Length: 366
Image 1 (cartoon, rainbow, N blue to C red):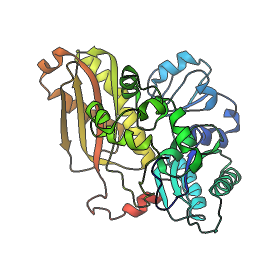
Image 2 (image 1 turned 90 degrees about the horizontal axis):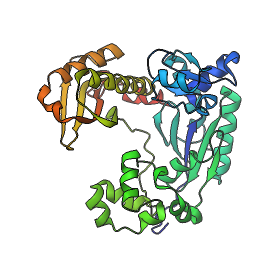
Image 3 (image 1 turned 135 degrees about the vertical axis):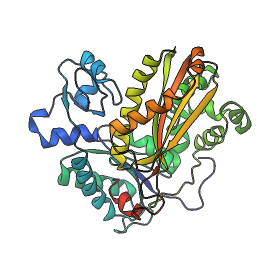
């Protein structure tokens, strides 16, 4: 790390292993050791989560379930039980709270913890992470992976390093080498499209990313360039924010070939809408404002938003209104071809004092 923080922090990122699928396997012994997909069916739908047994066949979350079935004919599809997942998530949250109040939930199955000053006066963040993992296993029967480091960015990457049931420490003296050796696609915040663009520019890992100036990165990647410049140097001063309220949730997909026909566009949106719905369920949030994003083959981009009186709380509502927005776009615009579609929900219930329970909602978010 080139620029040390004034106060060296101890940050843990805890990420449950295949959470939804693991809960199903733990609750139903007949599913243990078998390939399980939460959500979807053989004929239609999208996989919300896949067990590690299913992942060995290439099954992943957000994959069309028909494709998952082709990859793994033995796969077992189960219906999501979000109330059960929230119940287990609250058990895990209570374990965190016995160590620190600085907990930033990202979803039901992952959170950041700042244990620099912790309730048990433990000097070692690694020992705290081990204790948390053991308590989770003892009280829920589930495994978690944890990453420990000096900031949120490195801890997040570290937690994914030895999954499942992993524990990875990246101490202050190892941050620089860890980031330099990291493949560019492993950098949190670098998606497939950006990773490919970086590779085309000769940026394949942290070391080659580090060779670029901030100005050059911003010229190629906009404001994100400054972020990449800082994080590859281990500079991430973002605090663990226990009052973090997410402003929007969405999903988008870039297609292998341009779409022009309305039926093709709606079929593509089906998968995106289901992904958004599952994410909303996972975060226990429902929005009143729906935004459709369309990027054309010439990279021109438009967004269309609509705000409703009540939050869109069902899959059918989100789909109906998304298609309605799509139908109101001039069909001539699609003749050039669409390369990306995205759907986002924002203006969440409770944000404007309607329910006055933002803090209560956060306690449900792991």
